[in-house]
Amino acid sequence: MKKWLQIIACTLFACMMTAGSALAKDKIVVGFSQIGAESAWRVANTDSIVSEAKSRPHIELKFSDAQQKQENQIKAIRSFISQGVDVIAFSPVVETGWEPVLKEAKRAKIPVILSDRAVDVQDDTLWVTFMGSDFVEEGRRAGNWLMENYDRLKNPDKSSDVVNVVELQGTVGSAPAIDRKDGFAEVTKGSAFKIIKSQSGDFTRAKGKEVMEAFLKSEGKKIDVLYAHNDDMALGAIQAIEEYGLNPGKDIIIVSIDAVRGAFEAMVEGKINCTVECSPLLGPQLFDAVEDLMAGKELPKRIVTNEGVFPAETAAETLPTRKY
Ligand code: GZL
Image (cartoon, rainbow, N blue to C red; front, side, top):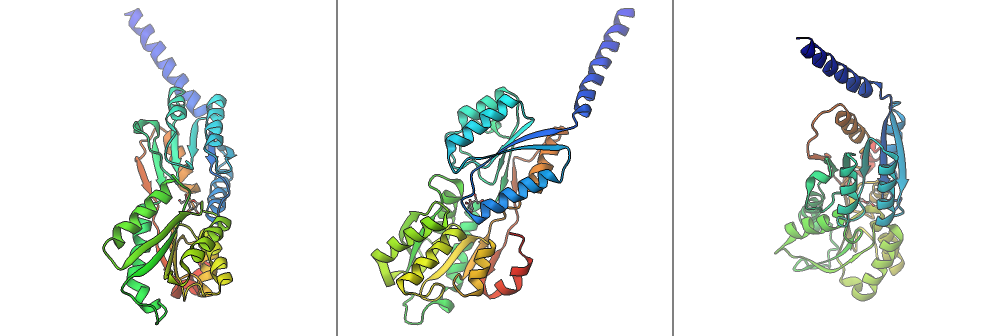
């Protein structure tokens, strides 16, 4: 009988120690690898993550900015592993090339949360949950809004037999660029809306202007519509359109994605016709998920952010309510 009592006593002691160590953990250390600061959206996303971490005294955030380079994100994740953080979270700049480092995190028993963008890996046990927008749906919303509103907005002397669309894509190989292209193409397939030029502007204002200049040089007044995968590229393109001597929002209808403040200001000026929301305010959701994870709760594999569509007509009244 004595032997059994000893076994029970040891088991109870071990349980108390484990519980104690979890309870004694006064800090949850999170390593976050951010893509960069390529757009107003990204800056707002970083602000949301950093400020939310600051508002939670039990969260210690180790933040790394990769300047839009995958190799820097991989280095940062390896560093988090060697530091023995409790959770790794990151916004993957592109979809592929993550297996090796995610397998290292798994071997180190460090859970990984995907924030904002997804990865394309065979083994989905390499990440715990993906939280962020449905980019395909954002592309569909942009295409549907355009088809429903183009005729009332277009320059009267433009025909509607074929509507020539130029597309500014996001970063090559990134989930939002791939999915936003697919969603727009899916809903406009077989319609009068034809993409005549499509090129990456890497989600930046400068590159968006540069590529739009090239579109205008080759297609000129043939262009009826600009579909931009983010507002920063649309704002750069507006500069190119005006320098070319055309009126953005009138001669060229512009539909974009993100719904950042700059897009609302451009809509108030009549230079963008619609922006589809993609919320960067992921900080609260991210650290709720971290805390649930550390408390041993099961996380859903996919957490989708809720978003809307903002036409220019409502921009003035909506602008004061915008948080980014
Ligand atoms: C979308 C996000 C994209 C934004 C861009 O969730 O990954 O990256 O649309 C940003 O503005 O650069």
